[in-house]
Length: 77
Image 1 (cartoon, helix red, strand yellow):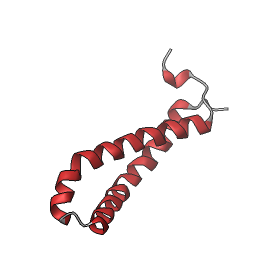
Image 2 (cartoon, helix red, strand yellow):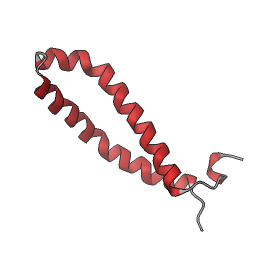
Image 3 (cartoon, one colour):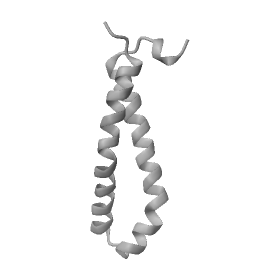
Image 4 (cartoon, helix red, strand yellow):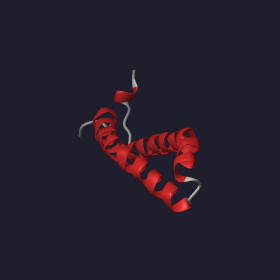
């Protein structure tokens, strides 16, 4: 029996997807921080704009996976 057969609440499925993307975003920030630091010269405002751009890039991916996981994890009633 796989995960697709478990009965999860909508909130739990959304929380799981959110947590996974939060961890992914933090990982990408840690991975790219040395490059962002070099490009921005350490200016906090520039780093903030770059980090915001990174968040905007992964936002459509988050929405796609949220819809996909809801369909996959939640039983149809």
